[in-house]
Image (cartoon, rainbow, N blue to C red):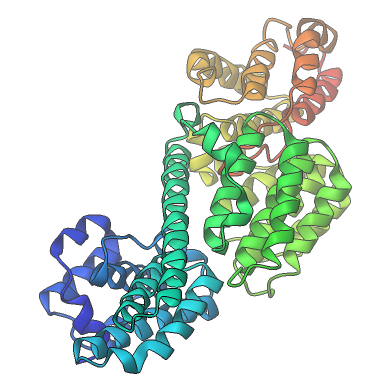
Length: 468
């Protein structure tokens, strides 16, 4: 039987609690004996195998949980995944040989394996191999080597504890992202501010830590600081072994959004282009790049470039609602009508959102309805918004969302008269434009800025004064 499967089968069943979905099915199958051959495991995706191999191998000799694969298997390209998997297979081989009483034969091999683990930041593996080499040095009464490997083991153990601390913070942040409840995330600010990121030799732990720091600055609207952190991360990732294009792209994207929030459109667009250059035209990341290019062009009001970008891209299956919303707004700019009811049905998730997207959907609806002169439906939509005012103004919504809701609700009291509406909302509008755009960890920003939508509404009111 393949030594990998043999080793996996000796793990206790309590590990099942760590998995869900396909990963759990894979673990259950191996522990029950259903999957006994390499071909059986190969039926599962690389991500599930990576999680399984890393966690379960580390359980063979230690209770330490592998940080790198557990948190980021979905980021790993084949090259890095192969390095990680191959390293654990080599470690498994050394354990088989040691079990046969042939420890001395694998010492040289383990030294090479330890160097690989340290170079790539595989702290969990480095701890286990260093322990073996300490034991071998003790048997050989090689005090100098013993102390050297003890130092490596202690440093790797410290690194592993740091990584696990980072993991706990990141998972809390990720959980808040799923629930859209960022205010309850408690960050260990002392830990975050005191930790030297240069100590993190794993590209994954470094990336997650920098994600946390960037998010912390963005949450406090400190975009200049967030941009500097992204630049620092990009510089470091170029020199870290095992760093990956997806990680580099993530910081280009975050730096671009920070600049976008500061309305530095040209530099923000350049960062998007830098990120785009990392991938082939067939990568799903190209879709992400296209979306944020369109957002940038709309924010900068480079509408002709936005029309060209939108019409020249066919693969809209991924992030479909983003494209539908962008398309509806560009149709308004081009003076093309849309079927408003159909449009709302095409963006069901955005329509249910209460953190900002739904307000953009409503804003685009209002633009098309006001242009058509359909004020009955405009009033119905605004009255519906008014009845749900409390939901929109809760803590989940951004500050700009709350201001924009209040502005929209002044349209009816202002009798859709541009002069009246401007007078009633001038203070709110000043607050809106002076309030920096907020960027949550999900990076779901205003596809069209609220102030852009409002200015377009006012232009239309100039054409429809007193037509109530």
